[in-house]
Length: 453
Image 1 (cartoon, one colour):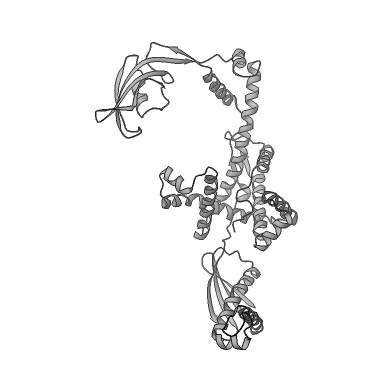
Image 2 (tube, rainbow, N blue to C red):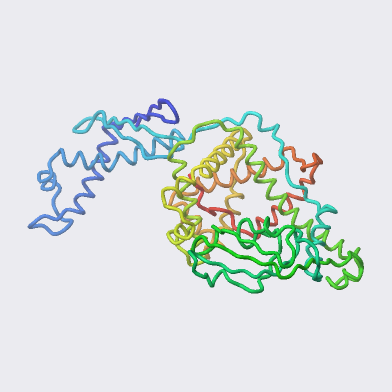
């Protein structure tokens, strides 16, 4: 077999393959053996038709066609592997010689994964949320706790934001009373936007006994007319921030202990948020260096993966995608089109990480592969040897190796980008990486073991 490779426009190549007479003779023998095993003719037992009878019955042209059907896929695959082509779509095959006799020459026009450039990747800088709880964060949390211990004081003054008002409401539609919009003692926190649009503006500066009317559009069962009276105004009185409050609101003996506990717990949450942002924004920064038109086939493949992920998550709640679309008021075409931006970004991220693997000569050695096989086998309830055999049978070992290399590229990226918080202060990278690694150990990777090639 001889092959030649020609680059075409875009991300396509033309692979021309010539199969000589000797190879064809062996291929024809294999095809005839297969046809003999499968043949069933009157007067002969299945699989026992003499070859000369079979050849006579089928004819040279039919046998040659069977040979082509048998050998073209094999020689195409051998040529792709020989040229190390990363094929992303079905080839267009054109047999140019040998359909009836002589050497076979065929051309395969192939769409391959584009190789992108990431110039400037060593100078990337990202901003992440501060992993440390500030005094303002702690004060905000304490204020939330104070809200839970607030007392209500009846007041004789105009309504302010945050007051709790008791309302008498009568709703109607077309002059007919609407029972679902009628109440004598509805309690509402002013400024929360929790009833209908526009009511907060009407209530602000109102007093007990004031009445007003409002046409509400955003209510269940359609627009309605509301008649509202303010019957009671109360303000929330928050407890003082002192040791007594700490004792009432927590298991601690004083305010300093409560604040220190809040600092630890909030910092733990903020470190996780910062670590996730570190990874996401590192990828975003790398994707920003990619300036190519993403092949449609890769976009569609990624959209399919996104759909599969959504279907899996919904199935855990016993909800189908069709149910989800009905509940969210989306038609399938609009929903699918809405996946394009996310799919394009993820494809670019994949291409960028592959480029980083290439320029930094990142490799997955056998120990990396073995470690991943152990993890995948444990999830599947198999032995590592069984998992390897399955992946090898399906031709997925190379994809697994590529997946590992991209994971290592992401790790390299996170360890090498410049990183500051919103105030421009340096962030403890090692601490965030440790948090991220702990999180990864406790959660499955997305698309585990599938390596979207």
